Image 1 (tube, helix red, strand yellow):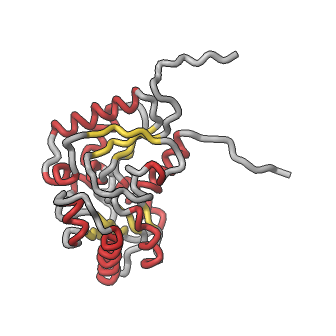
Image 2 (cartoon, helix red, strand yellow):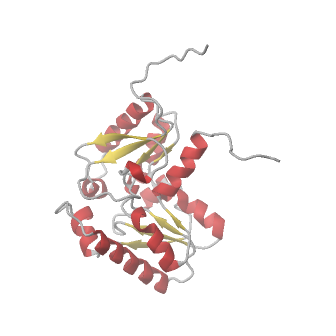
Length: 242
């Protein structure tokens, strides 16, 4: 007979998510839509920390709140911790140092990997090119990787809802069209680009359309979450030998 120690209120959670406060739609493919994922998630809500605040003023107090939230997720038994905004990369190292489970708060962590896999510059599509700094790239270990940055700063629907937080209703088809238009322009100006990394967690719902358009591998927070889940919770392989 096996005696389990207990002590956890919720069991069987794979990935914990540091979830910023936002109320716009989260279609399948969004990290804050758990139906996007093939494993269990637990969300630690960070009321008052919004995308506009994180981009404009990533303060030490904000970092402390994120570290506290990460520790709570660890105490609840998650096997790894991610985040709901790629700009959390600026705090990646501090959060990772504060807990004892893997931390991957930004899809930008994949930028060096994508470059090593292809030997070509990486196209980074971000919510705001104006807000993506060297400090964010340093947090993700990507400051020395050849990249081309394409922001959605001029995308009307995307910026109105997500960057300026002016309303919660959103035209998803228009956001997809804005993303594809920005990506086409990036590739036209920089045809040497190989893989694409989507910094923004709001963009994975459109990754399949983006790949169909650009014919390039596309990495995002969902591809990273799936990889970390498989590494943190290894399972026997199905199949047979003979």
